[in-house]
Length: 520
Image (tube, rainbow, N blue to C red):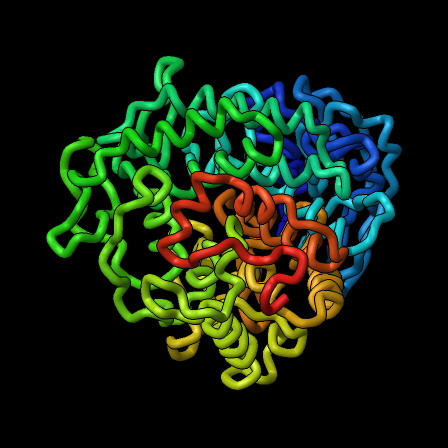
């Protein structure tokens, strides 16, 4: 809201960066191909309009500027609207090849309110199953830096300030999926470049007893652990299994063998807590063992166990605590392992804890889908069929929030769970219909799913966090493969890797039949 009627010489406004931080002149948006550059031309959307919803009286000037502050496009809006109205102004995509900022300015004497400022995006015609993957992959790709080889924890922060090792691994795996012939979102050569570049930069990191950092930052041209964060067992497990699968998919055996060697060099015995479980990792000094371990049942613990199993297939960790019950009913917990491995689609009791994973995952899906209609039946989320009580950024995007279907009065939805659990749904077309409703409500724009939304629909957080973006991209690929009834390349890589197969003996004696996977 801008009040300038009593200040005839004053103006007010705001600028919005279109790509990266404003001070980074090298990051721009090409309106003829608005997605990150590694995405192939036929999958690139165009920006063809600027849309602003405003009310009041006066003038609003819209401008698109280059890094050198050169005006690439401008439009003056004469406003005399007591109620909000959407104004849509076309932009010739070819005229903006280096867009850096989108600026709106309320001219002197204006009394205006602005609720929405948006880009009008033309996405190439494609089926919803391919588009859901494309938008999800583009979301994590916006956090990737070709210069550094790392994925930023959030797309809007500066490269080198706060990078996520686990998301970096998942991006390499998502790129391998994107290079599959059935999608062609990136070329195989580009996917292999991402894989090898990632491997080269991550293997230079200092480790603690072999564990990789959770987050890193660049200091004097060198990457090191971000202060106040940890050397993490689960992030090492996610990174390594992502990279191993990607190396198998892209036929780069030397990277696969080096990843296995890295896991074998981890000093697991020095990570073990008195009860026999592996610790969450080491503090930032690289020496102090974190007192909490991977005891609770779920995908995180399973991936850490598989990590050690790849290094030593003979090791038998102690049982998980509360087998078959995810802590607080948090959505992502029983789904994380299935981003990487098909075995947990089985309803045979696993050999380690006797859990029927498929039944547990289906029960969680049922609880998640029933929660909002039961507790908040008139909410916008319930009316749209949206669900997802999981974990991610809080409503303001300045802290971590963990929700769950076992908790009362939950009102913050993390829709990544919809994608993570989507392959459990008996009718994939119904999931894509839900995505269509979410798109109309602005919860699934071309930049990928929003991070979270309030059940009442009063607010949503469009921030692009790379961890959940990684979950979404991999899940969207599995849903795509199921819907098309084609071989799932990630699952095939898991099934054909001898290192993963030996480790998986901890849970299942033989690989699943991927032509007719249980429960799918």
